[in-house]
Image (cartoon, rainbow, N blue to C red; front, side, top):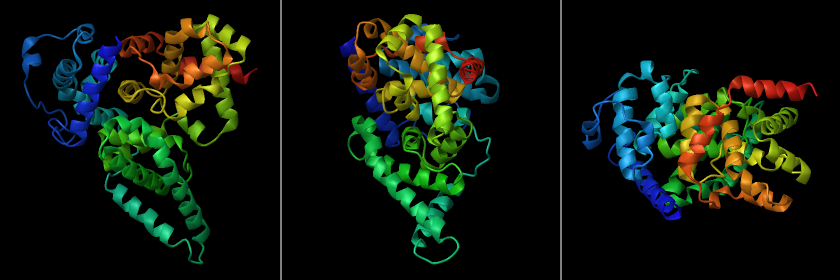
Length: 368
């Protein structure tokens, strides 16, 4: 399993690097709903492919097969197909690397109707405002605050990028430069929300698969309808409520582990905040985090809580044998573990929390 996992991860990195360099079937090669090619995989199966059979394929073959299925069954008629049960199966099977930017952007949508051309205008506006921070006018204080925020943002960027170290070469540098610009544009558009370090992880993940303009549009729309805003805006009461609600969910779904955590004094805030604030970009290997994001963009941020429960379930037997320090060490070092991606995704699918289940847990905790 370890060797197989390492091989798949190496293949993932190779395909991702090709996509970032504008390789075959890159983000600009496909127009919406356009069928690009007919390959061996599309000619092999004339009917619908069983998603379970795809799990058995080597990574590169799996990518090629999924690419053909997504093109023919979903992207060919997006409006009718993307919310279908078949599409849901395919999101869980994984969006192929070369189509991920297109699928993520379309899945997130643009309910805010942001014109991508606003991006460069907002980046320039941020620069102009920072240049005026020494002027003595009614905007001076706001400009100085903006300059200070952007300074902190760019200090944080290098500490955010280690999860991209597998790409090597110049790619992390290019992405880090754009991460700063995306967030500067966002600060101009939504000064009411402000900046949080966790936002860097979201923007850097989007920039792996989308160009800066599209990443900005996706980031702004994604955050607009996300529970993550409660975390990024440092709403202490709401964050504590979410932590208590998650403990409630663990007690319902994993009662033995919950009892063990209570006995040791392990609280969700000791590990879950890091998981959620980075939307798993910081804590999972990049290829697995991308699979999690396939579900995040399609099913919403309830997925982030389902992922947390699935991780705990996959580690339950081990965690039950550990003391306080060892539990926290295990939960904070997930990137160093060899994890069966498909098994974890199946676990997420089995749990699949609804908005109602999270709201019910929040309701129970708010009444205590």
